[in-house]
Image 1 (tube, rainbow, N blue to C red):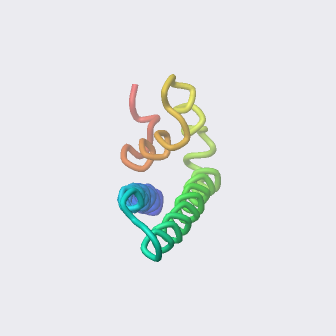
Image 2 (image 1 turned 90 degrees about the vertical axis):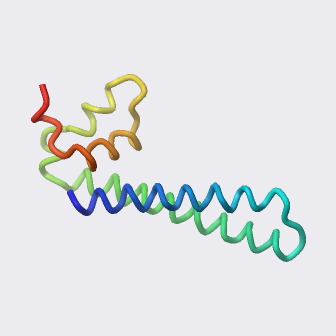
Length: 98
C-alpha cells in the first residue's frame, strides 16, 4: 500500500508543478517561454508515466485486483480511475467497510 500512496502523492505533486508552470507561461516571453514550455512538456510526460505506474500497481496487486476493488469503486458515479486510486491508497482494504 505504501507504493500506491507514494505514486498517488507523486502524481498530485507533478500536477501542482504543472499548474504552477502553466501560470508562469501566461507572462513569459522569449527564452523564458521556451523554458517553461519545455518544463510543461516534461511534467505532462511524468504525469502520464506516473498514472501508468499507478494503474499497473493496482492491476498487479493481488489484493486489489482479485477483489476488483478499483473496478468496484469506479462503478460509483463521479469516481474514475484517479479518484479510485486515491481512495485505495488512502483507505486501503475497501472490503472492510459495509
